[in-house]
Structure formats: C-alpha cells, structure tokens
Amino acid sequence: MWRQRDARAWALGGLVLAATLAGCVDKTEKSTEAAAAEVLALRQATEADARELAVGLPKGAAQLASLYAEGEDVSKDLERIKGALARVRSGVPELNGAKATFFALATPEGQILRSDLEVEQLAGRDLYAALPPLRQAPSRDYLVASGTLPGAEWVKGRAEAQYVTTSAVKVGGAPRGVLVAGWSWSFYAYRLETVARGDARTETEAKGPGHNVPLLYAFVVVGDEAYGARTTPDVSLSAIQALGLTRLIQGEAVWKGPVQIAERPHGVAAVRAPALGAEVVIGLIRQET
Image (cartoon, rainbow, N blue to C red):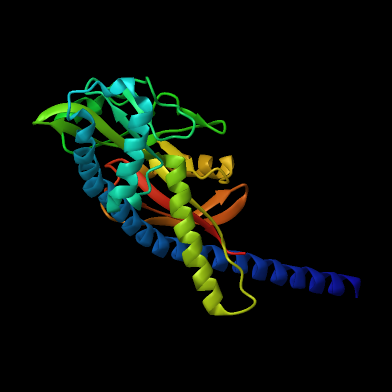
C-alpha cells in the first residue's frame, strides 16, 4: 500500500513539475516573441532620433556663425558661448526635441571651449584625441562618431561611451568652430527602455485587470561593449555582452532567443541600428511577471 501511495505521489509530483516547467517555457517564448516585435519599433525610434540631429545640427551651426561675425575671439567669453548653445537648442525645432544630453562648441583644432552641462566636464578637452574620425569636422556639415569623451569615461562605476555628432561653424566659407552634440549610450538605453515600457504598459492595460507589466531592460551594444540604463543589473549586461551580438546579427534580421540571466530564463531580442552606426545593436530583455 505504501509503495502504491509513494508511486502515486511521485507521479503527481512529476506532473506538477512538468506543468511548471511548461509554464516557464511558455512565458519565456511569449517574452521572446514580444521582445522581437518591440525591437523593430525601437529601431524606428533610433532612425527618428538620428534624423533630428542630422537635420538640426547644421541649422544650429549656421546660427552660431554670428558669434564670429565681427572677428571676435569667442574663447574669452565662455558664458556667452553657453547662452548661444542654449538659444540654438531651443530655437531649432529639431534640436529642441532632440535626445542629445549635451551640446558644446569646439575650436577647429578640436579644443572644447564650453558645453551646456550644468557641471562642466568637457571644457578644455581635446575632442579629436578622443575621437580621431572627427578631425574632419571643420570641413564637414555633419559627422558622426562613437567613442569615449575625456571626462565622461565612467558613470556610476560603469565604463561609458558616447554617440557624438558635429557640424562645422563657418563664416564666409572658412571654419571658425565646431558644434558638437550627442548622448551617452547608457542614457540612450534608458531612452529606448522608456519607449518599451510605455508600449508594454499600454498592452497590459488593454488586457484588463489581473495582468502585470513585464520586467523590461533595454540595452545598446557598440562593438563588443554592452550598455544599459543605471537600473539594469550588471549580471544582465554581462549576459548580453557574452552573446557577441554584433557578430551574430547580419543585415536587418532580428536575433531572438531565451537567455539565462541569474539562473532564470529571459526572452531577449536584438537588431542592428544602422542609423546610429555600423557596429550598433539595440535590444530588449523581457520577462513576464
């Protein structure tokens, strides 16, 4: 009798375990598919964000030409530069809505004179030493590079890098300065995460009571480095970085699959974001709750 009861107990336990595992698999598959759909929407957001700077920055540079109109040495009046940057940012429609977290003015030789940051971190730094491709900036209406600006190498104990755009400030066709704008990749991951959370919240509300908003973390991979918002756990970024997504993803294909993070399955999807650079991948970690 005891053996029969034991056998029944083991059988029942096995059924419960199987059902639990099946439920986990179903949730992970759901998370993966939902993340795959969302990253396509996020890629569209990257295109719009890049376009704002590509259109707006040359307009801003044209406005800054007035700083040099009388042949003045603007480097002697840094507060005037800061004021001019603020006017450009608010006065050019595309820049007013741009996702850039900093604007700055540099000399044609690459020395940053002043930024619009509340706590100045960039003034006096060599822009070209940090980002050699930008040496062409004085002769280009618009240029883009990714790298690490001096003074902004670490944020909250994490290595940081930036998306940097430039536009030459010219007077009579001659370069007099370089307008610089961009964002940190960790901030940009947060920007994408905000979009994804908003979409997930709308989706959850449409289902009615009894449904929870999923756990979501957006990330950006540039080359071999993964960046996330400040709230993204280090273990999650390590797991994403280990995937080598810039090598896995070809063309416009969406990469998706379950990924073990902290010994729990999560749905992950990622896609290239060519509007931000040839070696940039954006993605989403999702887990149903």
